[in-house]
Amino acid sequence: MTRPEIRVRDLHKSFGDNQVLKGIDLEMERGEVVCVIGPSGSGKSTLLRCVNLLEEPTKGQVFVGGTEITDPDVDIDAVRRRIGMVFQQFNLFPHLSVTENLTLPQRRVLGRDKASAARTAAENLARVGLSEKAEAYPASLSGGQQQRVAIARALAMGPQVMLFDEPTSALDPELVGDVLAVMRRLAREGMTMMVVTHEMTFAREVADRVVFMDGGVIVEDGTPDQVIGAPRHERTRHFLSRLL
Ligand code: ADP
Ligand code: MG
Image (cartoon, rainbow, N blue to C red):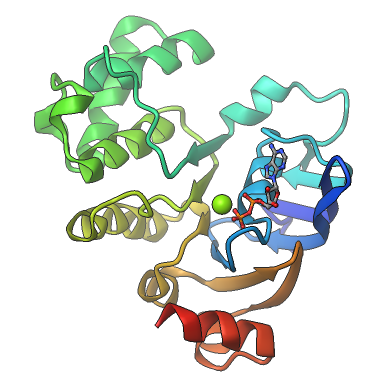
């Protein structure tokens, strides 16, 4: 029995008296791609943010690669280095070039020297198909290119897990495909990925599992064919019918 790469156990999160996560249990194997779907406000972002400790869980445990990251004694910075996160908003530094956006966190957080950070930046820009934009500034790039830079920036840190929170939701429709193509390649390379998305075609093609959340709980967890193709719960059917 291999150890799961991510294990979430009885996770609860409240903001004041707003109970947002009400007992989430989830395991992911190494190399697995899990798409998280569900209505707005169901707690998808909060779940991702608890998995890299951007939010502190109210109760429950999160393990990444066998380490309990919710242990109060854990080194939070060391945890975050192992988990890459990509948001709906790309959050690039506007005053830095693409390469500088990739090298700065490597130097600051990982202490890499300039040459090694630049080399890793170049490798990861190539991975997202943007080598020719190395010296460009974010404002000169399309939204899809900026999001691919944000993905490259996360990859340059050498994460063992990648979390994506609606990475294509802020993009014009014609730019979505390039970003999904990068994510599809990453999945094929064996990256462990948790992806909150409304892109059902992507989920069906790329996800090993789809998790449907509603009201702070996991309602359904199964293969894409099960959860999207033949949902067992009325709440899932209702959600999916509104996406079409
Ligand atoms: P989803 O990503 O599924 O749309 P979220 O996890 O963003 O859902 O939000 C779920 C609920 O948690 C919402 O009611 C939201 O208002 C609340 N919430 C999220 N983050 C915070 C926060 N930092 N402070 C207070 N409430 C929050
Ligand atoms: Mg969200």
